[in-house]
Length: 215
Length: 215
Image (cartoon, rainbow over all chains, first blue to last red; front, top):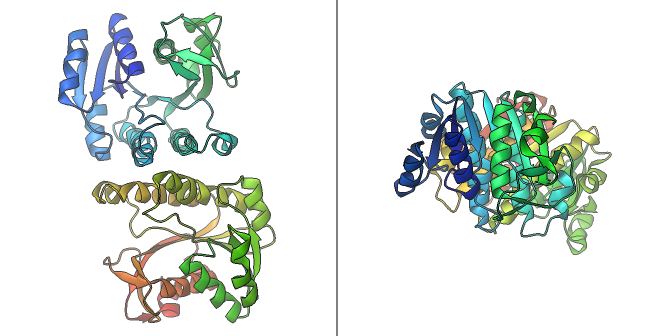
């Protein structure tokens, strides 16, 4: 199995590429700059340089030949709101369109913790555009016909992985280390029963594999 | 026939409310601030104060009891990009959802001239988030099941109306006075053959009514 990781150079992306390679599977890291490549090549992953602001056709070239796509790119809630639209929303939708065009069925999207209508209104005003962008990316993926899974992580930290999470359609908001999210993504790719599902995930008491398999 | 005009206090909105009332139909102007009401009341229109950043339920109250909705609100390409997401995209989608919830079938959306994939990439970087937001609003309306028309006007000016336009699925980019766009919207509301269509409109040689009826 070969997986394209979009946003590979982010913290979650780096953990995920490493896990995939360590488990003997193939990873293709989609990165924005050539100078980001050596990290992934040293791990034994393929790399492909594409900017999410490029065309669907450019992204499609990166998608061709893989079995699954994980979209974990994000402009983050603190960048300019222009990037929120162009990366978190339009970049995600273009990647979905590219996957469809390349006949890659499996698509795992890292979303925001809560992308409900209420969450947009209730979020701090600086955060609500980000939530809205994430919401419309979720909607586009749900309507795409792809074999999707949408992962809604809690408040991301750089803490060491605990290997244990709480995952369900709705969980209490809380923190979760990025490295644990990467493990959730890895296990999601191995677990076909997650297809067509969306779930929230925070730190918890259940080993990641078990948590994902029981969704 | 009663029409809700969302974004009534904008230049196109004001022209449209006036035209509707002058033609003996009913208009309900959706405005953001109470102090904007007197202008519309003097015209003989109803008013309703709702902020597009409010919930779908709040917008639904404004929609209840009308026969059609025209969405001509816009944060404009020069406001903060947070408003581009929250008004041009999420505000439009919430209004679509409110119309569905209120069983109002007819929905006319004022979009940007070109909301194609290519237009997002080709637009100046300061403008492309706006085009992307408009694109996703268009998509949401197309997928809503409502009796929609999407109007893509050219470069808007405050020139006097000429009463003549060129309207088709694709026309050469050019200018068009806001007052002519308002007339296009008015005629679109009267012309059921525009349902399910999207068209571009710029200044031209054909009287507005004739141009709209021949779409």
